[in-house]
Image 1: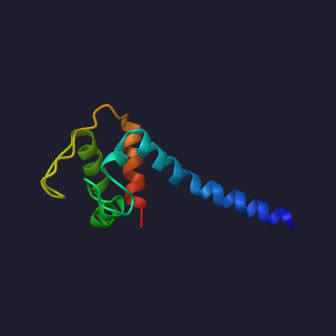
Image 2: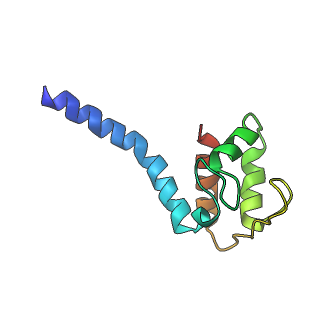
Length: 102
């Protein structure tokens, strides 16, 4: 009886790992200094970004570009600084994670 419970717990942990890993990636790259998952800080909450771009087939490319180059005006007049030193694959991973948030 313990084996199914252990397998279930392990499976759930494996499914949750990418979400936790991407949150850690956001922390590692200082994204969380301005953004949080479910509340506005300096910039919009990640869940609000996901909601705004839901159904937009071009969202991933737009947001990858925005993260790398920075920008202003979409969420108000506080500028988002460029993040040119963050690896391209990390930016893509972060954007995919953000867009997948519900």
